Length: 200
Image (cartoon, rainbow, N blue to C red; front, side, top):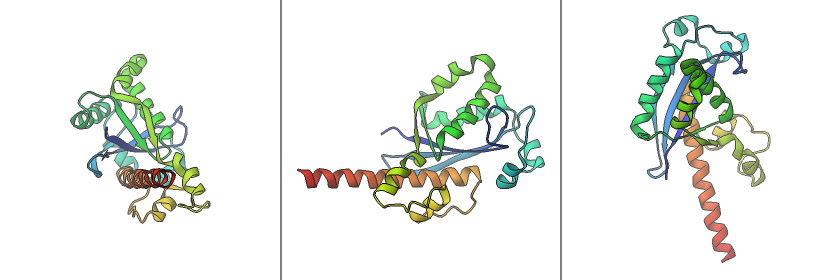
């Protein structure tokens, strides 16, 4: 099976039209080997940054950390270099927790790096499909695997016995999310096999 690139973005706020992507954690989820391998963290400095104080309090990213970060075009090059090892032909499937949020900020970074032609490079680099662990929550609630009051990432991780030592750190959140996706896929595979057995 094609591997999944699990990402987590820490940002200066919630609106990708206004706020900035500050860090991106990248983790490779190999579904054939059932392995999770961290690939790196990229620190990004956009030309101008609008900060929501609440977001900055959560992600603990300081002005000094931002000042020593890479500009958008250099950040995109680093990201593509990292991905090229596991995805030499592009077509990367992105995974995460609430993945559309992270994708929106990653697309913002591509727009800053490439301008009006950003989508041509984006559509070569990334597949249109995404894997969103949060989208499995209704199923996990329905079958009783996760209690209905557990909706946030770290609460769901706790139900799977997955430790996340640094919540809101891009690489730690991405790594924990990759492990969660792997566990959900394993369980789903088991449920489907059991269903086939009982209906045969």
